Image (cartoon, rainbow over all chains, first blue to last red; front, side):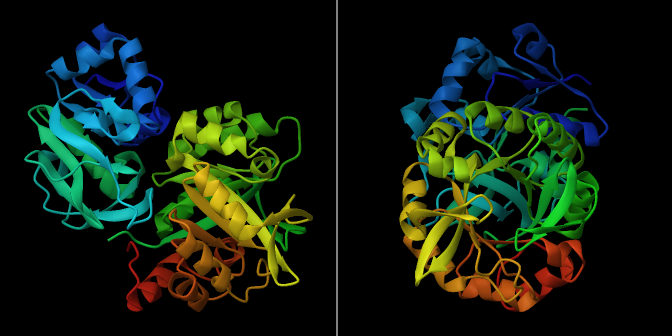
Length: 195
Length: 251
């Protein structure tokens, strides 16, 4: 199985690569459209600020490639947010895969949310064997609201989407690569989709 | 529900783990990667590595250590100690650290906080503050608590938040090494006046101290070293007791 982590200079990609390695697979890092297109599974990471990450994505021409991919694609954290239509962070237009707008948490809660929270109403092959209310690791200031694509939700002040899915596109707000054994199960589930 | 975090801190010197008692005497407590793996399996929520080396190879040694930890450990970790530039942070995050912690370099050059938050995002920038009370005022100290500054803890903490820090790690020098409990009055004030997470550090001696810092100190996370390194408190038992008090923790 060819697993490619999109390397566009915005993300903690080493941790994802190591997590996949711990599961017994090898992932390659690439920004080459031909390599990405030929992969069986594509991981779209993202850490940092939305507008600068989007700019890097555009500079490498990957903003038009990602929405057209047909194999399973997993966006993680900012990667998931950039797969949405828009994010308030840096007033940034996203890839438009998930038709929703990412917003900043209100100041009634501490921002960023940092730490372990729970996922529920799990409704995706990503969560096979994962229990309702399992703990996952999050670190973020912006969130996607509940949408028709929501396949996991978490409450921080109010409920919001911690995972989205539409066709072959998956996104997690949490970091599966840092979410202990629960996260490893979710990553493994993603790698097994369609196999 | 977002849980309270338990964070073992590993002080690192030349690639090995040490623990400062009142920041002066150092005792060896094992290999960092093995210790990190053991803590992650024992239920730690996060780890902090604080590098106190003073050698020329320090940066390279630390970057290599971060890579080795990331390869092995499946929970988040923060790296601090001697970080003073965008380049320092870049290599650590690239090698797999989730957050970096800056301390003296932020006091000397506050703009560094803005620069790092702008480049890497607030969520991965922790500002560590060491302070102790002088004539009833909390004064920020540098160099492991040896050098006083002119800065008031609460003023500095607010400035740090405004400049884009995602989290504050507050160590009370008055409490550190005493095992008499955390500085909960100051912690509660920080947690109430600021809107970013606060990690309590300095003074952990008993399980009750952790409960107190979450309830009275309103802390979002609690950091400790020697009580974990010398197995005076087991993380699982600690979390069970905290949960029994109705405080959310990951079990």
